[in-house]
Amino acid sequence: MAKRILNMTPTELTQLSKEDFISAIAGSEGRVLASETIGLIPPLLTDVTNAEFTASLGADLILLNMFDVWNPIIHSLPDVSAEETVREVKRLTGRMVGINLEPVEENVTTENADTLWAMSKGRYATVENAVRAQEMGVDMIVLTGNPGNGVSNEAIASSLKNISAKLKSKIVLAAGKMHAAGVIGEGGENIITKDDILLFANAGADIILLPAPGTVPGITTEYIRSLVSYAHSLGKLTITSIGTSQEGADTETIKRIALECKMTGTDIHHIGDSGYVGMALPENIFAYSVAIRGVRHTYHRMAQSIKR
Image (cartoon, rainbow, N blue to C red; front, top):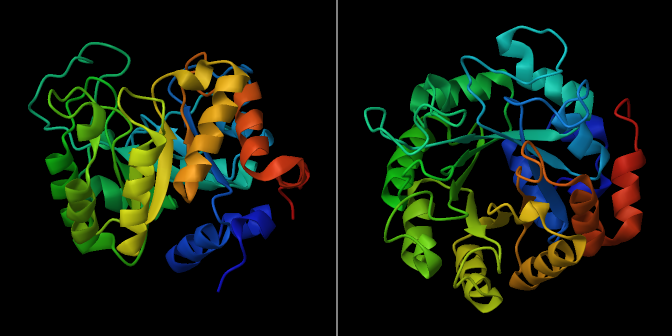
């Protein structure tokens, strides 16, 4: 059995096999923090990537949103080849790295067309893009949808099945939604149900993504607790997610959400990228970490040199 994430050095975190990744998260008993960032926009600290900033605040896993595997852009990252982008993020942060891929039909116009958030070739949840991500050093692929992109649970399951058939033994696969993602009829408790979890599990998911209690209408602690228990009964891990810009709320709200998520029994805690857009408010990443594991583990993760 692998060490817990809590006890791993940065070097160990960046060299995990899929099997050890899953074992280390399960062994941490709900004390793993994932922080989502966007590299496509200027970082908060100008010449320091948001990935480095979130890592410095206690995050264990960096989740890159809107990351195009064929045209990777992370502002303020040192000049490296496209193929080395993810490995450079891992080198600078000493953290695991995941990316989002979106099961959006390529011929469908979404609400985000002609905006910064518009889909690009390397963000679609295709087998080709997933293989590219794995070759770049990505530890986890999350199949989900950004707001307005029209990603349905059925589409997630379809893409997941195809990607899993190719990469099941090589990379961690997560699937689910943290909000309706622009799909009418998949709001509130219909964002994800036990039927969806079974669908994702059968399609090859290792981790089920769920909205955090209190982040979308109708999503209570009790409801998510029931879904976490069901996912665990299927042998799957879970990640509860803040994807509704509440990562930009006050710290008291963040701490409450963190504890509610802890009470659901989730394995990974996710905080989104829309504080000032690009990453959560720095104080909220720190507050979330302290709420779920205290200052000892939080400071340990923050203070440990990436050279270790």
